Picture 1 (tube, rainbow, N blue to C red):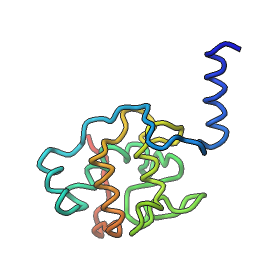
Picture 2 (tube, one colour):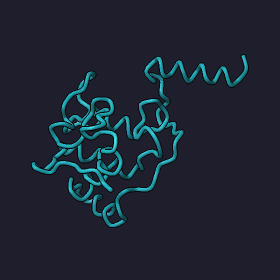
Picture 3 (cartoon, rainbow, N blue to C red):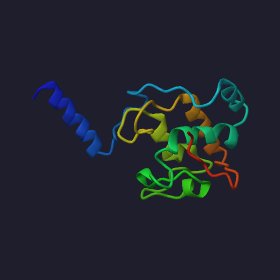
Length: 151
């Protein structure tokens, strides 16, 4: 077998195996620019606010594929109730426990088939940290604040 065939077979094996042997910390996709401005990033270091920090990230990075029309992976992020609804393998966001929230795994690595966003640049570490701290704080989401697609 040549090297290309071997590489393709290894990639297929990872997909079939469900990416169970993803090397921790290995990155194959570079991080994109933040959807938050410099001032928002600085203030988020003090306290994470859903409207000022989390909402722009979810709307700018996730809602395109996880609205009520697309429903990629059966995951809808329009309201808190929809975001917390368990999927076939359980919850994707576990309020109070970011380490047990698959959403963080999907957005924090860029080296396997389940990486999110599925296309494009990896979510910058600063935004991953904001979402991690938001989830650890209980994933507060003001009632009556559904996410809306950005233009």
